[in-house]
Image 1 (cartoon, rainbow, N blue to C red):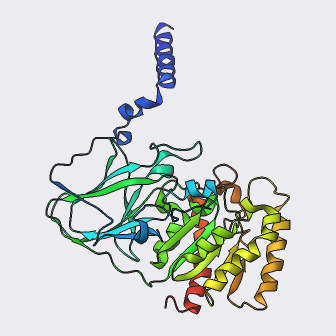
Image 2 (image 1 turned 90 degrees about the horizontal axis):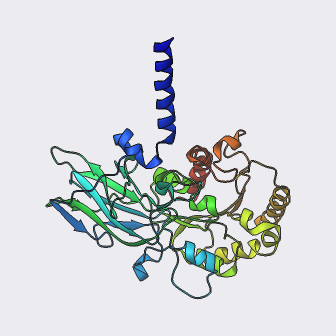
Image 3 (image 1 turned 180 degrees about the vertical axis):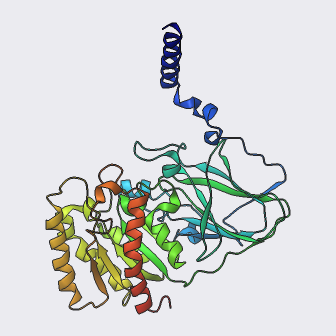
Length: 376
């Protein structure tokens, strides 16, 4: 009995010790969870705002040089104005033969997460390599002292194409790209078309709650079609205000304009404001397809959803009599009959939910882009 008692005591002690271990000690238990300092020896720093880098997704960047999704102006609703500093769908693309890709990024707010999004999902960046039709993830941020190493490949240099996705729910005060001294630097492959996908909506459109920027569904769609995406998703704040209609219409050269936001707006704003929102865009962009879509289903029943969808369908059908380029998508099944398994908090999709949304939207968008001769 004595050996058994001793074994039992040691086991109980081990379990108790493990249970009491603070989360901050995880890096001591698993080296892959450690965040290491970044060596900058032999690195030259570059400003991605200058050629041959290409900044994508920021319609007003060429005018103000700000990593911001809207212009700086009076009249923008305060929540939207704050969320405009979040850089969701903004990208930095380039080609280089550097064996390292480092980033020095000073965020607008501290590097952190929400209760339902990790720091990488809220404030992180990720790196894709390969080029159009061949993109694959090769790095994700592990910031220490505002620096992170996204890519390392010791050995012979070779030319590669890269794209960095900027944070979904944080802003960029300044950013530099670190490459090996003497590395070649070239422009990225061109987009499939100079026309852009423009998307207005709420938190799901902005990217809540992807695990990292590249997994937000509008980023998935942009990579698939090799088109620039201008994401005007503003969490909790898509309410069809006239000024937001004007700013959405101000985006140059749209291939398609996607309008969501019914969840934030509610039935009365959908009834009173959304038709004028669409009309404002149409006046600026005749002949451009405009798609009205709904937010995804939630865990619990939403008593207003059927009413809002009926209102949307009614005014879209009425407008379609004089506007053949207006479309309405019923998104009820976009994340599947088991949609509850695709939501992290009952409302916002996980990566699985975003992938399913993309899988449903890509064929629909493909047909539209071909019909309007944006893609072949």
